[in-house]
Image (cartoon, rainbow, N blue to C red; front, side):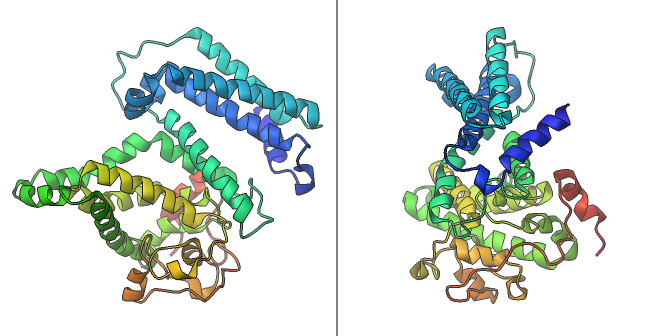
Amino acid sequence: MINKLRLAIRNDLEAPHEQRTFGSGWFSGVGALITSLAGLFLLLSWQYPSFFSMKELTAVIHRNPLFETVIQGFLIVGFLLACANLILRRNKILGFSAICIVFLATTLGQIGQISHAAIAHTNLGLDWFALNLLLTGVLFIPLEKMFGRLKDQPLFRSEWREDLFYFLLSSLLVQSLTYLTLAPSMAILQHASHWSELRQMMASQPLWLQVIEVMFLTDLVQYWFHRAFHQLPFLWGFHAVHHSAQAMDWLAGSRMHIVEIIGLRALTIIPMYALGFAESALHLYILLVYLNATFVHANVRFNVEWLKPFIVTPRFHHWHHGIEKEAIDVNFAIHFPWLDKLFGTYYMPKNQWPSGYGIGGHPVPNGYWSQFLYPFRRKN
């Protein structure tokens, strides 16, 4: 029963283009499903913070009484959109599913908040997933629809389920991943008391200068980390998961093996923390790098030629994912393309884009768990 329902929802989400026109009820159904799920996730994090909420968001957002109103707003909008889907669309599975989710959320809301005094472990960031997905989706989906390079690429393209699951997992485990990736930096700081003057000097610099310095240092570290994951066969098995995406959009950058995520973040964070940059500079950089990583994977046709020597653009990074022979082991930088020029790995044919994406022969299997095991099972 559950498998049939899941398959029915998937089929309607991936319906042919002619069945996804405005007025067909498809857009209201998708909107209903997204908003009702967001309302449910935020409600769970509100009612059960010990299980589903990040500590930082609990302190900043959940104590605000307006947060409950926001949750109710999501559920009301989800219900109204579901009604529109039921009226307009012959296949009513999206609207029906959204209404069930709204009723489930309403029932849970009536049960009330459980005691969480005995819970002391790290929580799942369900609230962060909902907010993260909404914010990035609201920003990048319209950009791709208005400025998409591939106009015929649907929102629910092939492999979207795998990438959404990667997005979900990294959001749920955000606190645990942060703890693991900060461990090397914290160990260094325990033996860096004689750096206090240097750290104070770095933190006293203007904010804009600190952000630029952090961008340079982290990009330099990640360039060599990234290059190693391409050129060392065992490490390539992990990074191949990221390159297995055969379509590029705002969600594709989420596909990364958890081993690579921990290693990359642990190494790139070291200069940020060890050198003592101000917290405001670190927070601003984290926001910038997150938006930038999403943007350079996005399906957008921006081709600002005068920017390409100074900052990484989508076309630069798309060539890193290109299927062409010339695109192998090029364009490793995430911020500054001149690093690739300096180290001989720069490739940007004028006004050209890759003809396709992925790995020759497409050896990486589909599905999260198959991709998780791929580096350990593959034949070199």
